[in-house]
Length: 290
Ligand SMILES: Nc1ncnc2c1ncn2[C@@H]1O[C@H](COP(=O)(O)OP(=O)(O)OP(=O)(O)O)[C@@H](O)[C@H]1O
Image 1 (cartoon, rainbow, N blue to C red):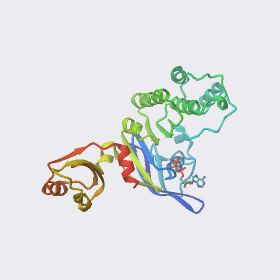
Image 2: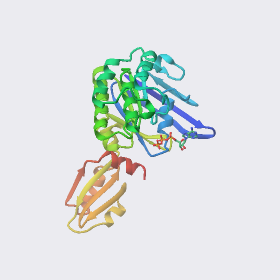
Image 3: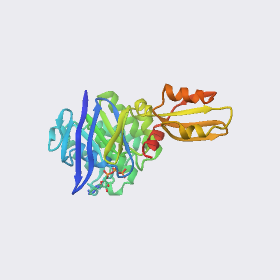
Image 4: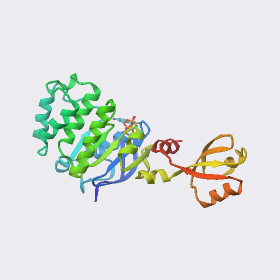
């Protein structure tokens, strides 16, 4: 079942259109990564998806309903923003009380359990927390709602590696125990690769492609090709080659549209070895944004 459905969503700031027709589906119980260069529109998309902004065009369904000005749906959605500038004068304990009032599903015991690991002093005011501590708090509070859908805008920024692991463990726990679905934006692609089931890659206000991690990587192929002698000219002529490098007669090639014809062309040109090497999400990102 799809918990998030976006159809042809457009959003402008004034006359400047930022989202140019975004369509995106996220399956229940999955962790979906949102990646893209600075300024491509991730936060704008997230603010539409959480109902903070109304889209100018298109449809956004969360749990089957429009989210904008829909408190019933919003009550089922956790949101960790990329910066937390509100409630600065509140003590953590007061924030817990506030969440209890706003969200009937808020589970104080779970919050205390999470904070047992993270170790924030609950008598502190929000403004006395470091950036990483404030991000951890936002994640813990929102996870303790047991939301059906969790939207997280760079939630790991500022967190040390131990806190990152703890927050990821909490997220996975909520997914496993309660079937929570997650959309998470991050610039740490290695991290997303190990953590997400699927991802979307944004570029200039559009989704370039979306799919499972394996499907994302299918777009490009990385080959190791060995000739008896140096043969760089072949890669200048071969179709789909994005980049190549060599160490003597051993070539590493990144190409698009690899298949039998290219394999045959390399063999006919005298390649002794043509071997596919796994690509990382980071490599897919870099070659997609060239
Ligand atoms: N409130 C605003 N008013 C006008 N323009 C804005 C506003 N917020 C963002 N923008 C512009 O919209 C574009 C997309 O910004 P957005 O914050 O959505 O990008 P992002 O992908 O989240 O970037 P980053 O990875 O740096 O956080 C940018 O060009 C930005 O300058």
